[in-house]
Amino acid sequence: MKRLVVLSGAGMSAESGLRTFREMGGLWEEYDVYKVASPGGWQRDRALVLKFYNERRKQLLEAVPNQGHRDLVKLERSFDVRIITQNVDDLHERAGSSNVLHLHGEIRKSRSTVDPALVYDIEGWELKVGDLCEKGSQLRPHVVWFGEAVPAIEEAAEIVSGAGIFVVIGTSMNVYPAAGLINYVPPGVPVYIIDPNEVAIPESSRIKVIRMKAGEGVRELMREFNIKTRT
Ligand code: OAD
Picture 1: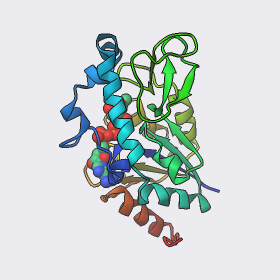
Picture 2 (picture 1 turned 180 degrees about the vertical axis):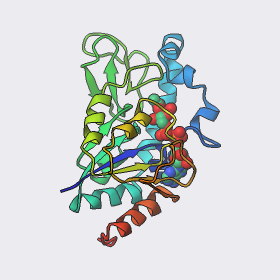
Picture 3 (picture 1 turned 60 degrees about the vertical axis):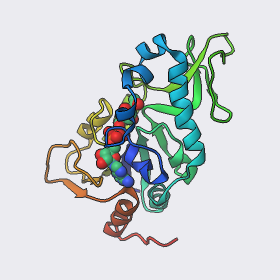
């Protein structure tokens, strides 16, 4: 089966009610990214960082996958679908996608601050100051903060290098190294961009823009590939 690689971002989960980052009303308009999502912010005020992610986690627990997430699962009948997501939510997994790689971590997990190999599932929505790993150190959210390395990027680049189709959904392509993954798409492989707004990608003849929200856009993609949209 042909490999169809999806690079998803916050717009993928917008129709599930989760906020994006850089649009009007986005999270980075309300919060200072360096205070809530950087190693420096963590040093200064752990409680504030934990509160920010607790709120995100609480909302995620109330959210459900949308039509876009569900239709990507249906695409697995026709393609070897590999999802590379910048999202820290688990909506691709909850929809039923089999292959999901999280570039920026997973908000429903916590990690030790002395041993990054110690990763735990978080029960419920709250991670508190004083919650410790088995080695006695404070737990932090298992996410990538600004200024931190993206450990999964090499695996992601490898996946993209084997793509037969590349689909970008709901990301402004402003954050690197994630946005740079498009440079690993082999020559001649078609690239689809599903986003209701303009995305920071240089124009190219192989790029087909589907200017729609994720739900409708993935439907359009299925029509393009002559895949039945009814289950
Ligand atoms: P952005 O907020 O930068 O971009 C969201 C994109 O989704 C925009 O291009 C919107 O036009 C689009 N969009 C909005 N609603 C949509 C919908 N219903 N369907 C499809 N697209 C829609 O979010 P990301 O590109 O994901 O990193 O941001 C990348 C990273 O920056 C995030 O992973 C996060 C953030 O800071 C970290 O926290 C490390």
